[in-house]
Amino acid sequence: MASRLAMTAAAIAMVAATLPALPASAQPQAAPPAIVTRLDPTDAVQILQDAGYRATITHTEDRQVDIQSRMSGLTVYMTLMGCTEGRQCTSIQMRLTTDLAFLGMTNERRADIEAAMVATNRWANHRRYAISYVYFSRNSNQHIVALAADHALFGGSTREAIAHTIRNYGDLAGEFVTFMRDPANRQMPNL
Image 1 (cartoon, helix red, strand yellow):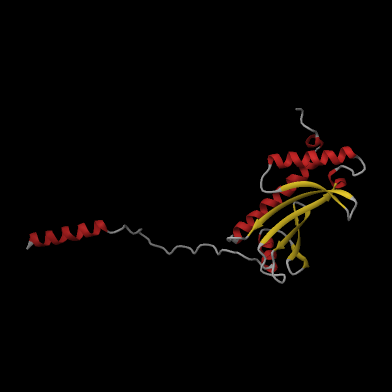
Image 2: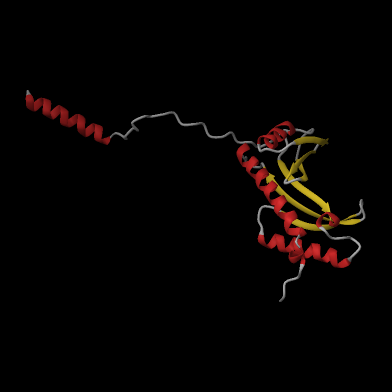
């Protein structure tokens, strides 16, 4: 009888050894974050506000919606694009634009325009996640400096990833203006 009991115990031990081990306290796993493939303007405003920024919808068209915000003390526009009837947008662009005077330069001097181009190129060579450029605005008849970043929702993204892109852009916007205002960054490097 004792040997039968020992054989049964050994058989149970062998079967138990082949089963996967369970954690001592098996707790339910948190659900993965929801994937967003389209964004409504009210959702974008909420994400901006949750990231710590004010946000106001300023313009709505069928394919595009503009939202104004403040980041690093600067007016920034978030444009939702690829929308259907002003909703269900498939991509985001954040941008700030400023004239040369805001950066301590002037449109009257060709040297300042060239200096702005040098500085934006230097910025672009050393930074990621945003693009900087200078363009001539026919509306205002002056050169404008811009910093832009995109976040595409094609294939899906999480609200947390969108908020991270927004916060990162807000930090870059402040760094960009500081960089552009520093005269040392406007000098062509010696070759």
